[in-house]
Length: 353
Figure 1 (cartoon, helix red, strand yellow):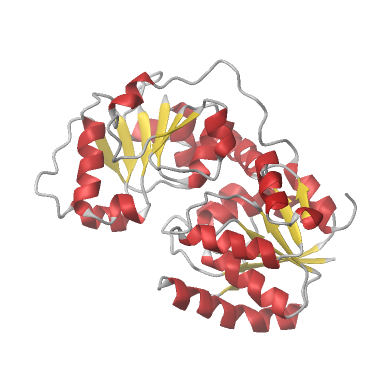
Figure 2 (cartoon, helix red, strand yellow; figure 1 turned 180 degrees about the vertical axis):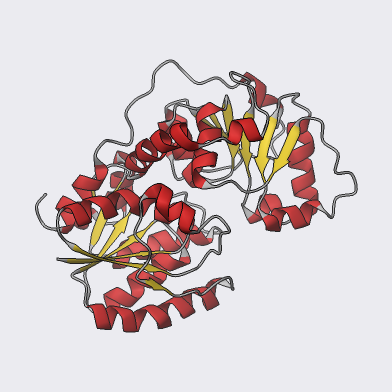
């Protein structure tokens, strides 16, 4: 069986890694296409080596662009590859423009398409990711749902007949990545973080949080006032916006360069709390049993909030940032995301589930 996997950003390669391993171990033919949607200075040979991922068979190198331009370019470039390779099934991940373009191209050619991380909903249509995931779910042939909530969303939209609960593939990715990070990463020593020292890990990338200088300054000033050490890996684009601030002196926030994957896992693994506006990091925080404060008004990972391990805290809230100080995770930690997810996904793809 020939299985084509289409990805466009580092988080998607992280999800691809465990499924790639089981595909090849089972003797199936795998083709990997990297759209190049996100240029990432850490997306290099070291990353592929650390995660034991084969180099992509095709790199479309589309780079940045508007939503329409990026999606259109991927559509145009991937179609001839699909015609040439004739995969039995195409696998797409998550909610990027790559996900939507890959699924659209395959469906129009009559190629069976499977969506990993299907039927998540933030119910915020102003997010491009929400549009991507909704459309991809409705055109794909196989929906691989990570949680019971996703299955409920599928039922609400009339998609139950093609939706299967398999769990979240990030469980497999994290278990593998954390074991390697604990052996190899030296980032704690490099950042002079003492053994057992408490710190929060901050990530910000949503346009409404980082593209406006005033909003970004409001968030950082507020978090700096908490008198907690905060490690903040800063994307180059965000760093450019930081340069526009008149007063860039912060007592408690350490601005550091974007981290290699295993180093970032180490920072998550050793922090006392995660502050983020990322969807994926909310989930990773839960799997790693780290309290997470999500700097957004909504989340697609509702289960993490219901469990008590994740708190939604919009940055325009009257209780931001003070509520961070009182947030504590409960003693219980339900198994929300499953186990051995890659094997379950492969069984569905090959008709052996």
